[in-house]
Image 1 (cartoon, helix red, strand yellow):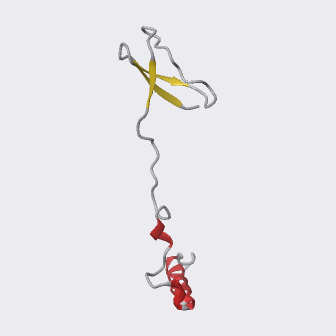
Image 2 (cartoon, rainbow, N blue to C red):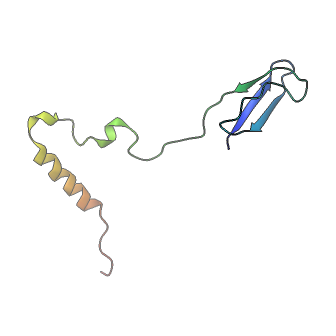
Length: 90
């Protein structure tokens, strides 16, 4: 279940609450009974590695409509062969 951060608008008290997605947001401060608001911050998700950008899947900068699809597949086969590890037992 997610943890939400709240802050009281009256006394400034800050606290966290573990709530389900279907639970209603809290409205009352446990310290003074004043109105509370949800605090929004940055999320804790980072995307590392390849495949997260539009340009990661592109082979070359030449247009695809030129009819040279066999040239791009040959270059990708070469890169796959050089990326594979050597067989064990040598």
